[in-house]
Length: 438
Image (tube, rainbow, N blue to C red):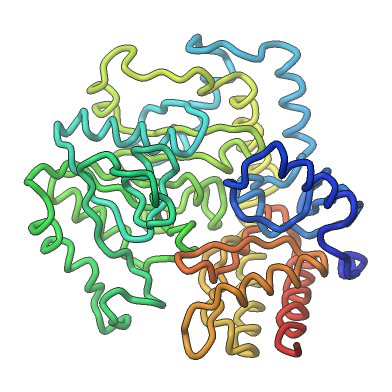
């Protein structure tokens, strides 16, 4: 493993050639990533087209939860594609089994699942169901939220970076502050604030709605905003707040589900029971797969044939979903996530004490955010870029995100070992040190 530490030029010569070609045929509108062209991957490791090896702390943006190209995943999909590759809305054995596994794994009140392809489709569908069932147009979302890049999903996303330049969104969204405790909107501190952001909700609703509020949509932790985790008890309190007001409660677990936090779903940590649950990313762990799991009464509201999806629940994706469940169970990846995640969190907190520029370390399981700052707690996006680059030169693949572009995501595949996690911290330590030394 130590050979990964060997410093390399980024981009390498072959990557340079391919990136030059890509610049001619692909628009520059995709996410800003490192100038590295991937070639192949296995488990927690990625190789670029120049033969350089990296430890991957991105999981393809929290997708490959069971690791890159897991042998059981590969064989399951290979076997399926020789039998049946598409069936549109016709049911298949694999689709029914995948749906049954999902329903059996979620809270008892969620009894039906509608299979889709992308996370944005899942959140859009959940919002449509909520509107149809409640008969009300307005929906409460939160500052910093990200629910996808289609118009409905953008409309409930609480960051200008997602929406800038696209004109007006779908009407009816009300926004409230999410508990970003490191940078509290109300400039308060836990526990003295008593979750003031929750107490302020009624005043916000009273001022902003037209008495047409029908639903609430929330992420258990905010991913794109910078891996922002609410204080313990907040999600359960939001559930109660929604139920007390007869609102449809939607939880967007597109990013946080399928073992990422040490439970299959993050809502399990506080026994949160939404009316609708949006899933995606790690659900297929390589193949596009998403779903909305909900109470029967909400699906009944849409009627027969009211929803459809060309690719949703297709045989290949369904085989992948089943394989994910099997791998998580057989390899006890939830336990590995908690164990390695706790060790990794402790090591990263040691780095926080060592470097003043590492302002905050937060997370759960194997999803951890590192917020970089300067001059106190001023966001330091340029410094963050340098850390990401310096780490990649030493063999560590990182991504950056956050409302201010100053948060590094630590989200490796759940198959990561403690040895690999320790090496990640060692590389990160060296990367930060090299920047501070000039």
